[in-house]
Amino acid sequence: PTHSPSRSTLHPIPPSSPPGLQPFHSTMLSLVVLKKLDATLPVLLSNVFSLDQFGFFKKGSVQEVCLFVSREVAKRCAKGSMVSVKHSDYMIHVKVTTDGLAVAAVCEQDYPRFTAFAAVKETLELYTKAQGSKWTTATKDRITPTPGLQQLLERYQNPTEVDKVLKIRKELDETKSIVIKNLDQMLERGEKLDTLVQKSNDLSFQSKAFADSAEDLNCSCVIL
Image (cartoon, rainbow, N blue to C red; front, side, top):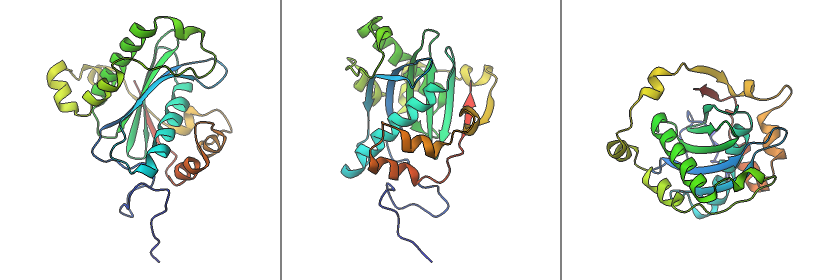
């Protein structure tokens, strides 16, 4: 029997496509700055979104899901690492500095990884220029605007044009050894992604239902 699309999905999609976040015209949905803590979830420091392609009633849920996956992936990244995690048709690209400042970019799956990390690097530079070392004392979410960050996100919506301007090269992909893991391997023993969704303070009840609509939670992960 044919079922109507769930109200929690963004748009009707072919049966062969996994439900959940589905790509549209925007290529980079969010840039999130976090401080990595040793024992608890990272704290939010700054964030921007580009969600005009989503309907009015979906924007809030998509934003919350972006925050959720950014925080959960950053928690599981070592200091000094760069990680790309696949979720449905999207990638979460995260860089964590050696002192624990992290940036996560949520992009469409086919968005060039080296370009995404260029945006992440620029975000780190913008944030540290604006805030200096103030972030080091944060112990809970302390979201402050970062001048120029929204404009940076909009500029990176067209990766081809960005590549022409910045002359970004692919050495990052070509010279780094890549290890592919299952996302479950990033979780602590006994943890399940759907359980993390239900416990998350980033997600409202509606967004938890939205996130639960994604059946393929065992996502592959690429660690640079």
